[in-house]
Every structure is written in C-alpha cells, then in structure tokens.
Length: 303
Image (cartoon, rainbow, N blue to C red; front, side, top):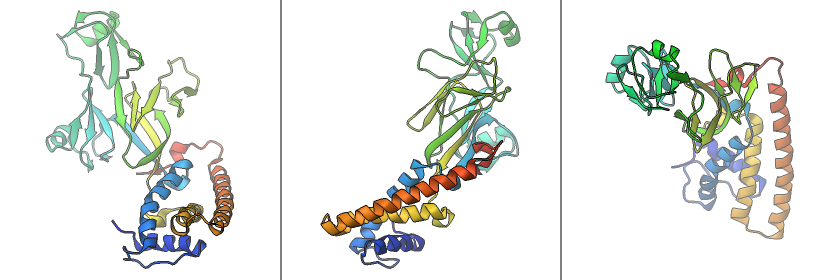
C-alpha cells in the first residue's frame, strides 16, 4: 500500500510544520514516507470518529420490506415473505425469486416464518408480514388471524432477557453510529441509547443495543445515520483537513524528532493549534446543524 499524491501533499504540510524534510510521491523508502504511511489512516479514522462531521454523515435504510426496482447495497437487509435476507451483491431489484436465484440475496434470518399446521411451543418466536410474534401458549397453528384473535400469539417488542429477535450488521465502513431510527406505523424514533424520545405514543418503547458492529433489536425496519470512512481527501471539510494536518504533525514530531526540549515546545504549539481548530470545527458544525425542524436523517448524505 502506498499513499496517493493528494495524501503525500497533506503529509508534507504536516512535515513542514515540524521543520522536517518532505518527500515526493512514489517515495516508499524514506523514513518520512514510512512514518506518514504508518499514521495516515489511523489519524484520519480517529478524527472522523471523535466528532459528528457533517461531511462524513451518511444515512442508510438498513432494513425494510423488499421492494422491486430499488437500489440495494451489500450493507442492506430486506424482509421477504417473513424472512430476513442480506444483499450479497449491490444491485437494482427486479423479481425477488429471480434475484435470489442469481445469488443477489443471502438468507440470514434465525427466526422462521409462521407456517400453518405446525406445532409451536410456549414462547416460540415467528415472523409474519415482517413482524415478530411470540407464542402465549403451546398449540398447533391453524389460521394465523384466528390464532392471533384467540390470544395464542402476541406482537412483541421483547424476548427473553438480553436476547433480541434480529441482528443487523452496520456497514463495514462505519466509524461511529450516530443515530438509529426505528421505522413503524407510528413513526416513533429512538435515540442513540435506544430509549423512547418522540412523539408521544402508547406503543411500548422498543429497545436496541450496539454490540461490536451489530445492532441487536426486535424491530424489522431500521434507518441509521453513521460516520463513514471518507478516504478521498477532496471530499474532506477544510476544517477537518487543517485539523488532520496538525494532529499528524504532532505524531510525526515525536516519531521523527524524538523527545528533546525543542520537540516538547513544538508539541505545545501544536496542542494549542489542535485545540483551537477542534473548537472552531465544533462551533461551525453546531451552527450548520442548528436549524429548526431539521433532522440528522434528512441532512445526512445518501450512500
């Protein structure tokens, strides 16, 4: 792996801040190029993660009912006939059976669709019409609407303690999950901590948790906003670029110049610059997002 020409330019600006020698594109042998390559991706990703940079916010309908003539990425899920599938290939949907036969979808549901004339145990879980139900009594399935009216099933937002009905992997390029918006008929939204926020409703608040890179929930339709790994430097916000240069310079100062008194003074100056740039970025970011009636979902970029 080597740095691009644009990335080398940024590295040289960082090197210039500490009075170090610069290097040219294609140089993979000098100490400067090796240190820049070592620190570049880590520095970028850490800075993207630490703040909700508007330019890196991305929205994605992570899971919903399958629709024809719809563009799907490999990060998305869809329910079809009560079963959960994940897109194996990026594609525009046509006929589901045809797409499935072409290996464009992979079945990932661990909960089967409801089937008539099937023996169900107490607390068994099934999906039907892309909804999760729990058995209130052991029984042999007849007509679902009849069994539901007879109190044999309940639409559920809970499962046994610490167990959820579904798990959805967030995109591999996600550095930070900013928001998880549960989609349902009442348009109830939930904040990052998985708690009920708005609007007022008699619907029980669903909960969700993030474990490693997986959302655990009982909900079958989910929209997310996340910080994407924006590795194309021309797409960076100018304040992010300035902050990146300063932070990278601070790392390079120790790596290339050691820990003498001159380096300590330089690090102090860089710390002040980083503090000022961080404050400026947060101020601008809060002003850009402080619009009455706006939402992160509507302002975030499409994938």
